[in-house]
Length: 426
Image (cartoon, rainbow, N blue to C red; front, side, top):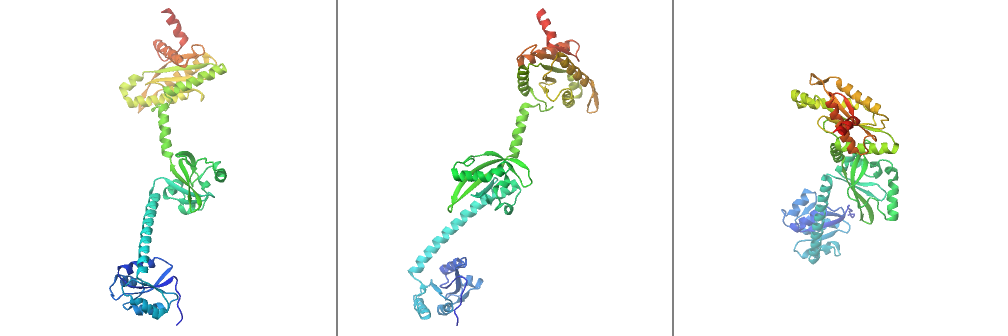
């Protein structure tokens, strides 16, 4: 009969107890080995059952199993039984030593058991690592020295909009905006040549990235490198910080703008005023500060309620913005108090024109939840550099002029120079 060949080294196992079953199970997982038969005097042995389930020939007579092995080239016999005569039987069949038994099998079994344990531990560790990578909230991207993506976890898919299949093998620069996209390959080459890192080892570096749909967004990046199998890889842990940046911007906005009218608050006004005075001083221009206090606001608040009062303040702020230039500033600094900063006003007459525009704008009725309501405004005006050079002093002077306007019948304006003579008389 012609010698048969198999895919995998042909093996016969004698002894199908616990050890034989475990050996069979291990060989079945290895493409380099082909179990052609297993034998045991106990037809109910665990190895016999496993072999039958997988279409492997089974025997209750070891000699018959050896005859089955004879037809395969270089067939090896593993004797896990306690029958020492198996070696003699094999010699009769093969004419050479092809039986591993006794101490050889014991040593082999110990080696197999240890390797299987190590393999199991590695598979467990790898499974745990892959589970972490798959379920971690941050994106994890691995690239090689050529800048090609070799790892792209589900979080990265969600962040960038690319599937893992689309990302693997692509250059990392597709996730970057210009000019970094064009310069990315040179970044890597420069590092490989000089060893001087630019972002490696930096935790939480804020960068701008690009999604698949072209949208740019703020991202936090922590990058590192590793050597594996003689090859260098770069690992990036990325986090979309869009919501965090929005929250930070909102907090910063609330710190400088009035929550109700969205006008600059007192803190931002002082910064604007300092800048305006410095600019006016450098260019030898005039600047005007107008302090406005509403007339009749308390009555509306008391009769129609705070909701109507809030609606009125919003309406007033919109009308005030319509009376000034884009280069000027209007701020809400109190309940019904507003300050306007007019840059490069040139003359007192121009400040008077703005004050009259404000009074005219406020004269139109306000619709407060179906109720027609009226308010007026008393305005005090101070001038730089005529009245003072200090911003805080200019605000105090405009405030004093505003009180004089109220004393003069309300719904009018007064300059600080109108206040000064009264102080001198005192």
